[in-house]
Amino acid sequence: MRVHIFVLIIVISASALAQQIPSDPVARLQEKLNRGDIKLEFNAKNGYLEAVLKALDIPVSSQTLVFSKTSLQLDRIGPWAPRALYFNDDVYVGAVLDGPILEFASVDPGTGGVFYTMTQKQGAEPEFDRQGTTCLLCHNSSSTGGVPGFLVRSIYPDRHGSAIASVGQDIATDQTPLKERWGGWYMSGTHSEPQSLGNWKSPMLTNEISSVKTYLSRLNVTSESPSTDLKSRFNVDSYLSPYSDVVALMVLTHQTNLHNLILATNQRARKAGYHGSVDERDSESVNSVGRAVEPLVRAMFFVNEAPLTGPMKGASEFASEFEDRGPRDRKNRSLRDFDLTRRLFRYPLSYLVYSDSFNALPEAARKYAYRRFREVLTGEDQRPEFAHLSASNRQAILEILIETKPDFAAFITDSGK
Image (cartoon, rainbow, N blue to C red; front, side):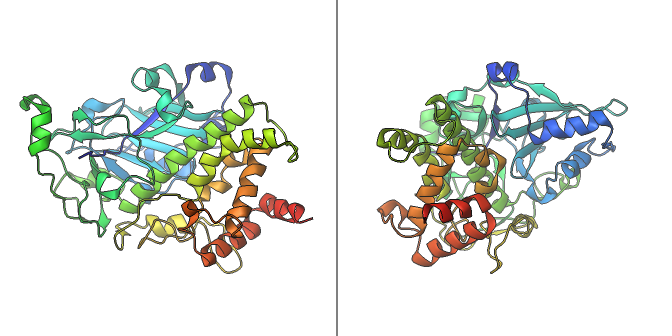
């Protein structure tokens, strides 16, 4: 049995750092600090954390808590002191209890994940320090598809949060069965999965196990009960929220994988020389672009998404706050609307279609994606992998896109001529 632990790992290319000036949200915030346009207030409880989240427009409700020792500050992390992660559509923030630094991963539309730290020291001018080599010492960027990005890995956590044994280099995505998710993370909320690993840890330490293979074969991994109250596990008053929202964990898994795929698609298309448009009469060029873009299209449509076995509900306000970020069409529908009974989203086309990184795709790649969206959503493409999209779903997604994404609407208009 493979057990998955969710660990957000930021992998940055050293060569890219040397050659690229980032234009990600954290870099833009640093420019505002340099100009004096904004001030970050320090407080005794959590340093610059609250101020930074507000400045980057990251909701506190996105908090997820991981107790595995998988960070730059691993010696400060454990089941009694989990690491807090906060995120929006293009920035991730990590905070360790009483840690000397905050950790940041920000999505640059052209270069991908960019990693920063900020010293938690009162009196010092707050500054985002860009990192590179430190991350590469532990992580191989090939695991992200050959681009600087984000990973969700899999380990068994022992009772101190250390890895008992690696279960490979698997990356959790929408396709990962839910029974294999949430290991090593605290999980707040309710769900109907017959087995899950949220809140679970081994009763033994790694050095107490003489044979990992024998131990794992005999271990009865029982499902921890879903919980909205984590007070019995650690001091929740030390955190901005008492929750580690299960819906936020679901979104985090989807989003990190999509960010990697978008950047990988961008780089493959550019390396193939398709910076602008492609003559659709040139079948060789169209097929070449298609090979680069098709994996992204499938992922954005949630092809082979692991189904939910029943209702899921988060413990915090994350779901409602996430949905409120829109945009919405005239019927008040949004790609950010949740389903949470059979699948994650009600209208299964990723909301990252609105992201700066998707918009930064070369014209040829973006137009190919739009053509594939049109073929799937109009029912022209009826292949089995898109069978999870009902006719009403396809029509709804098409209408939402046309009303909320102007360049897609223009593409539809032009392609109809």
